[in-house]
Length: 42
Image 1 (cartoon, helix red, strand yellow):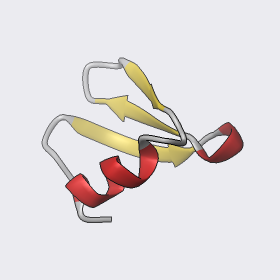
Image 2 (image 1 turned 90 degrees about the vertical axis):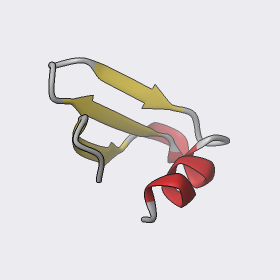
Image 3 (image 1 turned 180 degrees about the vertical axis):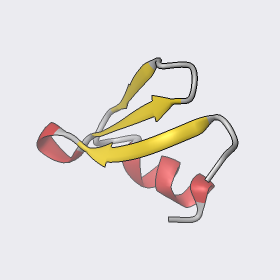
Image 4 (image 1 turned 45 degrees about the vertical axis):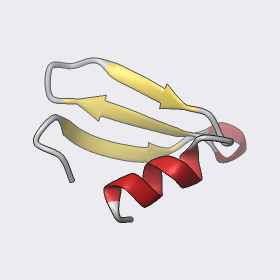
């Protein structure tokens, strides 16, 4: 996992939420979730 991310959690309808170290939360849509997982080697 990147030095920027702190936690990745499943969210509603197949999307995910990414908690960043600075406290920000980013939601990734279900369409983009597979691409994110591929980029992060999940």
